[in-house]
Image (cartoon, rainbow, N blue to C red; front, side):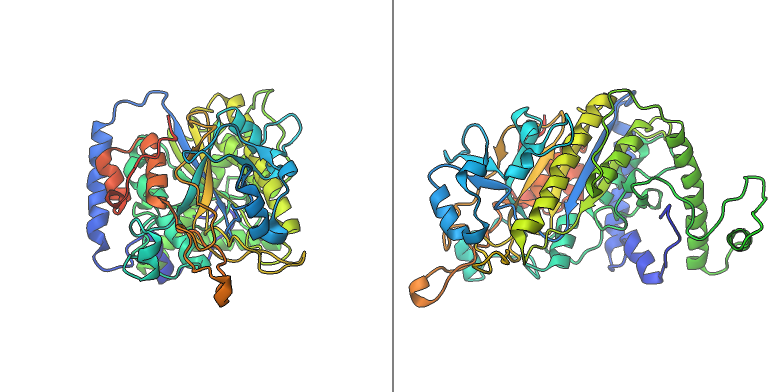
Length: 491
C-alpha cells in the first residue's frame, strides 16, 4: 500500500501482489501459514528483542570489479584487461590481510568518502563492521565452467537481462517464474512477532518491489517517500472532524471520502477501498509517531544524497519502532544508475559516493539509537558487469555480466573479511562463461560464473533474523542444493 497516493490496482496486479498468480501456489501459501503458527507458538517471548534487515538494491547492475580490486600480483594484468576502466594501484584503498587463496585486495578510492566526521565503507571494513561477500549471483544449482559451456548444467533463464536477474535476486528462486520475494516470505513467517501493530513490517522507501511480495495480506509492503508520510496527491486534508477546505482539493477529498465510505459489490474494488482506507489510517499513525520523535543529540546529519535521504527515513522509522509496536522490520531502499554502458569512469563516481556516504551515516545513526547490533544492512544488484571495457576511449563502460560482490554492514556482522571465493580474474579462465582465444579472434568479455548463490547469501541473513532450519528451507526452497548454506558473516 502506498502512503503517497492511490495507484492503479488491476486484477493482475492484485494476484501478483498476493503471490498466488501461479496455479498450485496456494499449497505453498498454506504451508507458510502453518509454519507461521508454529513459529509464533514456539518463539520465546521476545521482550525487548528487536531485529531489522535493510536491503540496499543497486539497480542497473553494479560493476563490482572496480569496487573490490586486486592489489598484489594480479594488479598488472587487471590493468591490462580492464583497459580504460582500470584503477591505478596508488588510488586503491588497501584491505588488510588476504583472501583464502592468498590474494590481496583493495576498495575503489571513493569508497573512502563519507559525510562530515562520519564513517565510510572503507573505514567500516577496517572497524570490522562491514564484510564483502564475493562473486554472488542467481544460481539454479552449483555450476562450473565446463557444464556451463556444454549446457549440461542448469542455468537461470534470461541471463544478463535486467528484469529477469532482478526478479531472481529478489525471489531467490532462479528456476521458477516470479511469484513471491524472499523478504515477503520471511515476513509471512515472522510477522506475528509484531504484536499489536497495525503497520506492515515491510516498508519500502523506494516504491514497489518484488523483494517484499508475500502471501499474507497483513504484510503487504508499505510505501513511503524519503520525506515521510505524505498527503494524497492533489487532495487537501480535513480537520479530523469532517470539515474540508472550501477549495477544489477540499471538494475532491470530500467526494473521495463519500465514495470510500460505501462498501463495493465487486471483490477487487472493495479490496482496493479497504487498502486505501488502511493506507490513509497508517499515514496518520506513522506521521504522528515521527512528529513526536526526539532523536538523540548524537544522531548524525545525513548527507543530501538520494540514498542518504532514504536511509535517514529508515533510521527514523527504526527510532519509532516501539510506537509502531514493531519488533521485526524489513526495509527496502535503492540507488539507481549502475547500468554504466557509457562514460563509466565519471558516471560511477556519484553512485559510489552516494553508497559510501549513505551507509556510513546510517551506521552512525544506528549506533546513536543503540540498535547497531540489531540492524543488518546488505546490498544486492541485478548482476555484475563485464571485466573488459566496451570501448578503448574515455566514453567506454562495461556491459551486463553475472556474478558480483555484495556488502553486509552492522554490529552483528563479522566484518573486515571477504567471504566466499573471489573470481580468478582470468579471461577464459575457470570462472568465465566465455572462451578467450585472441589468436582465433575470440576474445572474452569476462562474465564470472557466481561461486556463491543468492540462496546462501540470503539464508545467512535470514538465519540471523531468527528463522529456523525448516523455515529457511521453506523460504529458500533451493537452499539444500548449495554448500555452505551459512556463509559465516553473521555473528
